[in-house]
Each structure stands twice: as structure tokens, then as C-alpha cells.
Image (cartoon, rainbow, N blue to C red; front, side, top):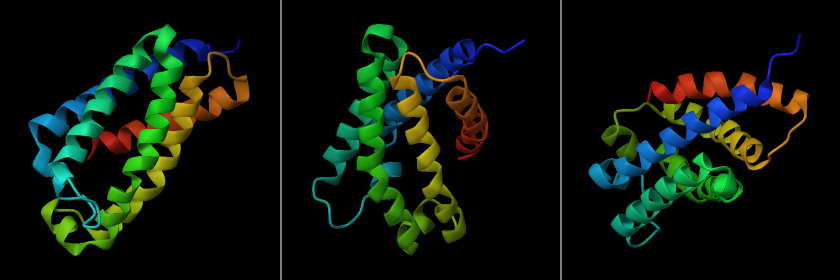
Length: 151
């Protein structure tokens, strides 16, 4: 008997939605955390932290509802690409690593974890996915969530 990938996909949607909303709220409750990894070449750091937090909350809420899920998932996909320079800056900046108390090797490990987040956002944007792709997404979902819960 096949396990129902649809049920597990729905669970992953709600978990990811909650995580994006929580991280978005953290942009407002602790903006200094995010300011520490803002690349120096960008202007208006605080405004960008608030803006990205707003969109994380918005897209996280959009994920919850079937009618807006497509837009929420693609919004998250684009947002992950937009904030990726902060992860690169964290890897390249000793100052940012010290501020977040993270080693260069841990900052390096964070970089490829954006890929499963992008894949999951894409998966969530599609109402129907193949059994094989859904199984793959379920497999990468588990270690991705475990990793991010340790940050």
C-alpha cells in the first residue's frame, strides 16, 4: 500500500508556513539578528530586514490557504533567492560570523540548505505532483527541518 504523499505534503505546507511566519516575526522582534548578516553593499539595512520579514509573514500566511498557496510558494521561492546574498555574506564575513557566534564551516553548511527550501517551495506551489517527486520532497523535508530547528 502506498503512503499518502498528499497528507504528508499538507503537513509540510503547514509546518513550513508556521516556520516562515515565525522567522518573519523575528525580523520585527529581533531585527539586530538580521542586520548582522546584511551585506555592506546594500543600503537601507533596517528597512530591508523589515521588508523581508513582512514578505515572509505574508507568504507564510498565503501558504496556508489553497487559493493563495501558489502565490505564497512562489513568493517564498523568490524571497529565498533575494535573501541568499545574506547567507553568502555570512560565509565571507568574519564579523558576521562572530556576531552570530557561528563558524565559517557552519556558515558554509547553511548555503546548500537553500536548495531544499527552494525545491520544497516549488513542490508546495503545485497542487499535484508525481509520486516520485513528492517522495523525494518528503525525504529532503525531514533533514531540512531538523537542520533549521537547530539554528
